[in-house]
Length: 281
Ligand code: ATP
Ligand code: MG
Image (cartoon, rainbow, N blue to C red; front, side, top):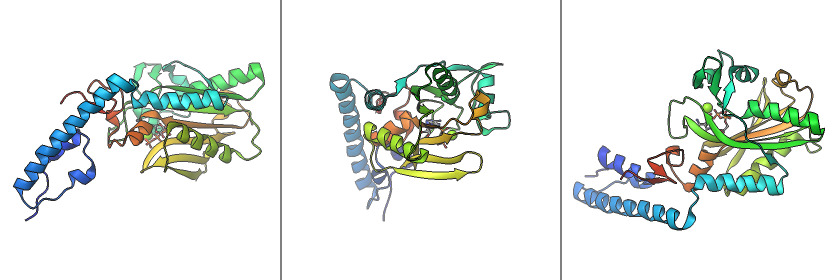
């Protein structure tokens, strides 16, 4: 006879961040299974406590903050990008200028503050506005990035949060002698290496509307997505025929992959998790 964990045992072990290999284990009989379960549960509780203690006594910064810090340092110290902080509450007109009108799929995911204001679902609208204004004053190539909360009503799942941290970088009015896709690849790989992520793929997709886009994917998780212009949306922002490249990364997704967590909730904004450790066990 061969047996597997009961649904309750499986649930408990998965709450304790057991690996799939453990969850799918097969035993000769119930006695062997229950013994293994008790030992594994105790081991995982111990490890959770150890990890929490290590954070509180030594590391102090959760992985999410570490990823933010590493990419910020790389962008500001090596890549000549400047950090900006823009409003989280944005007017509805900004969504419309991004092409997010009533029939756009993202429109259903918007958290409205009132009739004309919402919580930003992305950083791009504010960055469009910023890069245009900065360039008008300086007449130099603009390199800016923002890291901050974005909000989307998601039907949950292991890779989606309703509130998450986006890092969006844009470079505007640069000359791309090596081509914009090459620059995007360079920025995407640079960010991954700064964050400490290896073994990812860069996937190019071509669409009629948006031209070429570049996705950064690891273990089937999309960590970031990049595009370049001139772009059909540019004219909405008063930008015409100026080349740019931009990439948006999900910081929780990067932390999830780096920490080896199977669910994104562990690393997101939470009062039940701290840096992947469960606080309600
Ligand atoms: P997905 O197809 O996975 O929903 P998306 O195409 O909606 O992603 P983008 O709009 O391109 O994502 O956003 C850029 C990045 O932000 C994504 O590559 C991902 O890393 C992250 N991201 C997007 N939505 C979420 C979310 N709900 N929770 C956590 N991270 C997210
Ligand atoms: Mg999405």
